[in-house]
Amino acid sequence: MKKYFSLLFFFLIQLGFGQFKNIKIYENRAFPVGVCEPSIVVNPANPANVVAGGILDFVFTSQDSGKTWQTNTLKSESGVYGDPCLVADHDNHIYYLHLSDPEERGWSSKKLLDRIVVQRSDDGGKTWPMDGYTGLAHPKDQDKQWACADIETKNLAVTWTQFDKYNSRDTNDKSNILFSLSEDLGENFSTPIQINQFSGDCLDDDETTEGAVPAFGPNGEIYVAWSYNGWIYFDRSFDMGKTWLDEAIVAAEQGGGWTLDIPGIQRCNGMPVTVADVSDGPYRGAVYICWADQRNGPFDTDIFF
Image (cartoon, rainbow, N blue to C red; front, side, top):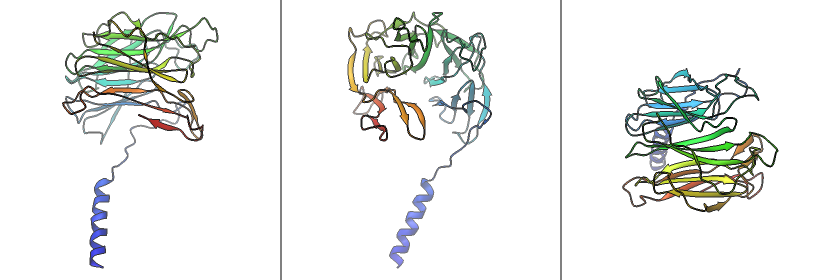
């Protein structure tokens, strides 16, 4: 009996240490679709500093490792229209990338997504004085951006989808993956270039090129993967994005495509996320891609790696 009691006591101690409290950052039931599509980053220069974003224009900051939070809204001369992406370099620079709304049309089908907006904070997310952009190509629409920061150079790489005309059924309208690089902490960006060889449609569905997420390797290599028509394509550059492969590599099959209708959850996406190992460990330089698909049926959504 004493033995069993000791085991139970040990189990309860471990259970107590293993429980973490879920903290509600913000709740607004009045917003049309709720505060969703969150992005979050831990500041490498100050790990107690955590910054998060949510649609359409929310920014949440914590200075105590996420125990308490402050809520603010982001402002930009180019407007703020969701799809938040937060990244940080190792020199206390935090970037908040989002879609544009320069005419402040808000939650409307007539919104103007004419560029990818890049804002930078140097005080842990409290203020965002740097307000730049890339990809301005009106009347084309810029959407679904992501970014990464190089540990050594602090360069900022951005990839996204450019729609000739969002939600267009015209077969002449195409979607493509674009890349742009900043070498001055997001102040200015290189002229965007197309890195995909196979263009998609503009219907924001499986046959649309989407989900491009870049990753810096340990020696400044840039890796990108995206979804298109049931496949995941992979490309890379060894000269800071100036040149890419003549033909992207097919990294994996994505059974059923990237658009997922999960029972009880509705529309989701299985777009790939790409990262590279920049540590000094045994897998330094390795590249990883993680995605979801329904190759086993609509009631069996799985994560693949």
